Image 1 (cartoon, rainbow, N blue to C red):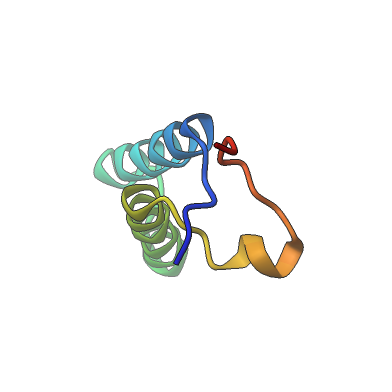
Image 2 (cartoon, helix red, strand yellow):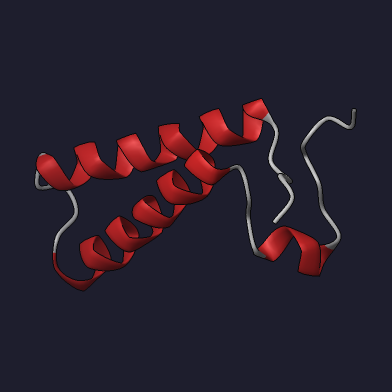
Length: 67
């Protein structure tokens, strides 16, 4: 599994996950929408930690700087 996410992409995903968590914590989102968004937030954090997005190879994307 090669890295395919750059630093900016990882930071952006973590920020989105934080915003979703804050919206849930504040009670702005709830119910099924909250559950779906929290799952996406978890996936964003996980993919940021491992620097690999499984959808990128399918779409032919790579935001990681080449060595």
